[in-house]
Length: 203
Image (cartoon, rainbow, N blue to C red; front, side, top):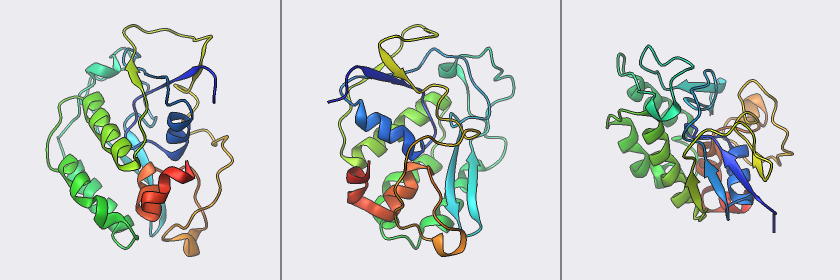
């Protein structure tokens, strides 16, 4: 049993490292809702495995979502058809994977319905992934911003696309690994589409 709990940010289709922490500390998870937007992070982007290698998908934000905007108030931009682009990309990446068809109907609505706020969108997606993984974390949300926590593991700045992941990740089968090798710490969707019900055991 791991002592203490953890605080996690709200990400868009978070990387595997996020779910390892979520599963490890599932008895006491605090989700950060009061922080200010941190740009160029997984808060509005995810990485998947495309036929050409790693592909970053970014949710565009309404202009004016500066660093002084609280994450819960950040709005999604629909100036161009990013949802269609993301959905076509996910299909191109995972259509041939063993389990994509099992999750397709659950994921599809997120790319056909408009959500106003990034946090709400990410939260609904996170709840879906938790359900698909069949894990039951005890989630609570921050009510004010606290810079440091002495009593819980803080992942708010640790899991970052610009930082090499510190987890010792065992390889699992990936669709295009013959072309580009095993890619670590991709979106949880990569694990789900390739491992299906076994994904939770991997975590």
